Image (cartoon, rainbow, N blue to C red):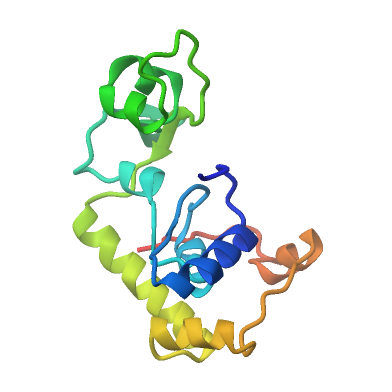
Length: 178
């Protein structure tokens, strides 16, 4: 049973236990960028859920709208109340078919348009490859082996370190992901 918290420790501990029985695991919740995908795979996840990431592509269902000049798409997670009211799949997934009171386990909102999945998926794949390259792993297998052998370490970063590590000392800048 999942607890709905995007924790690296949870992914690592479950993967460590599950690999004894050759059971694959899915990292679900909180995946918002290619870096999170790479970290989840390094920590032992076999795959990741990317609901809000893929919901922003033009091939996924949903209505586009503009807000403050930004093209957005309506997004609704499977665990939100609206999904549980409207769809049988959400009711079954969250064991609430017969419940009179629904408890939200997800959200609905909007996501920034990411364009076509045909350009977005290659961007994600390249990002994972670059992440492995930066770490010194030629494959996901090697990446995981590095983690379990203690050759790969994760460190906490302070807010100051994150700010200093990002773009700074510029009046303005533009950053396009792909």
